[in-house]
Length: 297
Image (cartoon, rainbow, N blue to C red; front, side, top):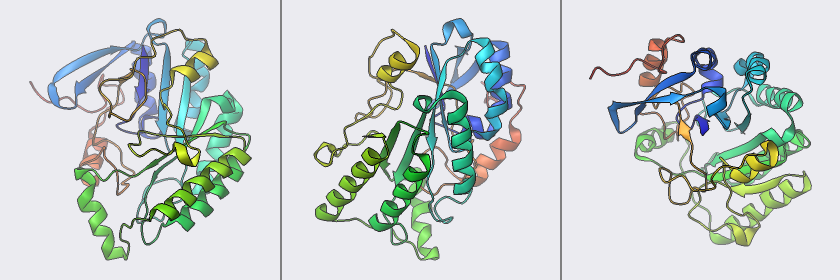
């Protein structure tokens, strides 16, 4: 069994203590996002967890616990988002300098093959056009050269939850934009070239649009090939049926909950609103079996 921690929130950044408490207990409780009264007990016993995949923008709070994870026999890798968007887009994310420092520290600790750099989602706007992303991607790639072997990109999908927040950016003078095919193609080829020059394999995440002509094949964030290569795993390569059509990830169990991430990213699909997320964060009990209190049945 693969544990995803988590597509729904940043567990390393905000809930590391809870995670370690649950690993000690050997299980956690996770409600069905679409039917909260349906609660699943997920085993976290080392002998039943093949690998844990951490999704994060800030692994710093989890770093002190890595030794304990290792002693308990857990195998894990990180999908680590590092960007440098304007604060209007990413108001609560760590400053780039801090993100790079933590990324490098983590890579030195567990190895570059176990820390994958996500530059996503890419938002094209009047403040973050192709030229902005080219400059930013190249600068970050230069800093992370040797600290990771893989880079993952995606283009923003404007979900219903985020539409109002993105529209409100107009008050800050920022509007979403599109680029024509020629500019788009040049942009993607540039990213592919930079990644190649920095020793990184660049793939896309859950993209309906074919990026192969630009040198960017589709990838898998929860990747059976990577897990097999790094950990010798012999599990099923079956695609996770609960994910989007274009997602290539293999099956996993996600232990996070929506509306618990307090970064406040304007494009986020996992939060209805920042105030609700903050309220849930206040309700969080690191000793409880679920990330936030479960609804009464």
